[in-house]
Image 1 (tube, rainbow, N blue to C red):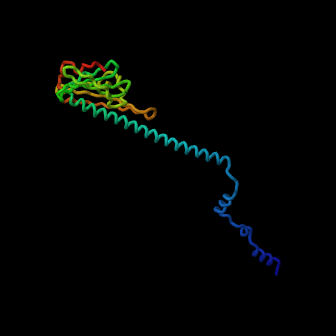
Image 2 (cartoon, helix red, strand yellow):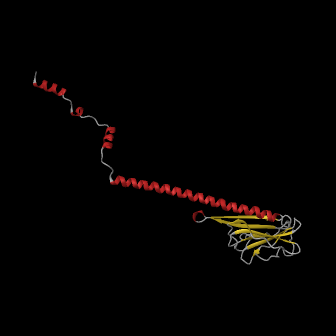
Image 3 (cartoon, rainbow, N blue to C red):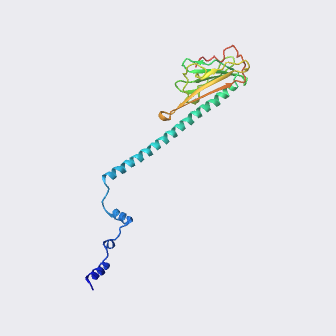
Amino acid sequence: MSEGSRIGRLGRRLPSRATRRPSRSRAGWLRQRMSRDDGTTLIELMVGMMLMTVFMAMFTGAVVMMNNAMNKSQEVNLTASQLNVAFQNVDSIVRYAAAISTPGVGTSGDWYVELRTTYTGTQVCTQLRVGITSQQLQRRTWSVNAVASKPTNWTPISSGISNGGAAGGPATQPFYLKAPLPTTQSQQLTVNLIAQSGSGRSFTNSTASFTLTAVNSTVPPPTSPICQEQGRP
């Protein structure tokens, strides 16, 4: 056998370098990488902390916004409820009034109005006022026969009413006697109320304006004073 033939046969028997070296797949490389105990670098740690900080800031901001929105909604509901209570009570008082006085400012600076009812057979006077200090819509009553009786204590109707010291004007003062039209048969009282509640971001300022008709009154109203036996509030 020639030397060339022997070398050729031996070459065929010996595996090549690529055959002897096992292939390393990506999955195997990852397993080997994970099994190593290299730890975490400072850069990786800082990047992770920055990402966590961003996520925490987003989460905290969302919670704060949700809380503010909830508080705002509660204050809006509260002011709306107070204005609704005021409307219902004032409507029942004005509806059956036989006469309404011209609204004015009392000695304490509070806006007030007086109404007289006679449908019970006895003349009953009612004073309504919006207190500057108390921030309440209040009422008190007394009866008038030969002599006026002692008035009741002021009773709150609704709270948080803040325009007790408002400037005069049909759109600002709490009580405004509407000027009659040629076809108007009864007196009409316009009530403007501003209800406030909350503080900071939850502060709410709600307004309500409604005109009520005294069905038992006449136009023009009587020239004699209406319910002035007790003086100004």
